Image 1: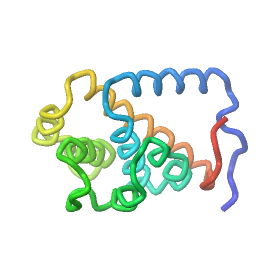
Image 2 (image 1 turned 45 degrees about the horizontal axis):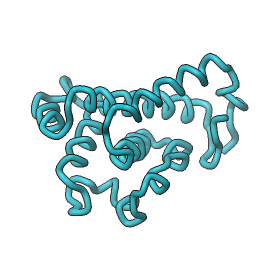
Image 3 (image 1 turned 45 degrees about the vertical axis):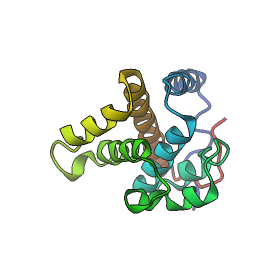
Length: 149
């Protein structure tokens, strides 16, 4: 696959803005491992190989076994209830067009059982920024292994 545009992130205002959002995401009190699982799952759903590859879940302490199981989180005992709630929220917020009201009250309530408001905001921001990058990278055909500088 050949990228359609080179160095899409070279605009300093874009890079600065995105870095500020990530700063807020990681300051929200959600375990880094959970945030990286959220990033990986949204990227899998959207078919963004560049984002799935660029994730830092392994560096955040997520085991290789767990990384390989992210696509089957809903039936895999490696994931705890809080991670399941975060991943359910991720799937619902990423698959908005699959059904009206995709982020149901039940999905939200389960997430709210495990995370406070600041953490919920952090999770939603991580889903949103991941979906943002997924759309950019898939549209520009950014290949896996490419890093935003």
